[in-house]
Image (tube, rainbow, N blue to C red):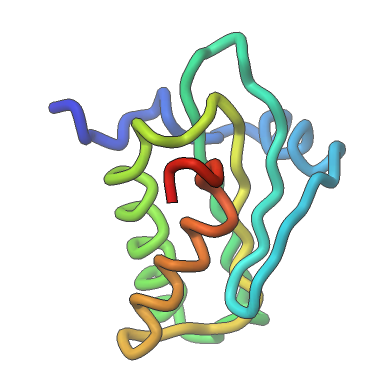
Length: 115
């Protein structure tokens, strides 16, 4: 049960997403861009995803990308600082780039000492 991805770990409302976008503290790599804002009140990290049709036209490809990011977040949630993260997919990736995407997520979201 410790590795579940419940609602407490998600950004759900427009206001929650807007507060992260308002700060514009962004880091990016070839496949992903990560925006983040402090979230000390909750004491744990939360994730929001943006995968637009510009990145991939087909819904099944967008869903695959979201699954990969959610799974990485779920497995590394304990190592992440108490921040709200919005991950935006910049370019479509598939199964062949899985490890590269996971490496980019680690570079963008984990503190340097945890990598």
